Each structure stands twice: as structure tokens, then as C-alpha cells.
Length: 140
Image 1 (cartoon, one colour):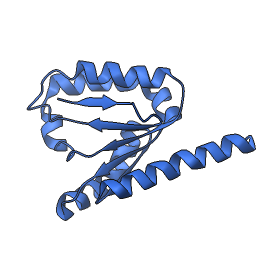
Image 2 (image 1 turned 90 degrees about the vertical axis):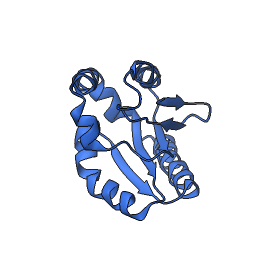
Image 3 (image 1 turned 45 degrees about the vertical axis):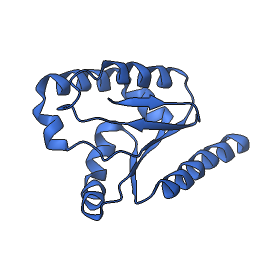
């Protein structure tokens, strides 16, 4: 099941399930939209291997729903989500995710950072948040 855990906001932990395993992703998108409506910047960390892009694209109903959701939330995504940090310990999958970064950023409106460990992800997430806090304190 895809989940969003915002207990450590502005660091948000997500788990994104394959659309083949979980057909109904509605709650995930409701939770995501609720985060966006806060109007505060945050970083997402996904510790679960990202679903296969081709598999996701093959689910036409899911893609239609996701594209509509994206259209409705594009501005909020680009304004509030600093990055999605993908933890991928497998070197081959990690390289595939790195190769996918430009497509991800164009579609979602924010960057994808790919790392090997959770510790790296957390350090980068904290740095992203700190950078925004410093800019806000300077009035940038």
C-alpha cells in the first residue's frame, strides 16, 4: 500500500507501491494533496524501491487519474516539494533511477535525488530544509 507519513514534517516518509499490487491509490493522493495544502516546503524520502515506470504506464486508468491530479496540483508541487529522495541500495536500480531524474523532474516539477542509504537520504533532506530556512531568514 502506498503511504505518506508526515510525523517528521518537513521531512515526509513515503512508500510507493506498484499499481499492479495496489490498484487503488486514492488515499495516497488525498494525503499528498493535504500536505500540499499546508503551503509549506517539504522533502519526501522513499525507502521502498520505486515502482517500474513501464509497469505504471501500462495501467491506463491509473495514469489518467494521476495525470489529472498532476494538472490540478502542478503549481503546489513545484512551490512546496523541494525534492523526492529515493533510497535504492541496488546499484543497477539506482543507476536506472539516476537516468530517470530528468523525466521525473519534468513530470513532477521537483527534483529526484537518488542515494544508496537512508542515512544519506536523511542528511540530504535535512540539508534541503536547512537551505530553505536560511533563505527565508535572509528574506530571499
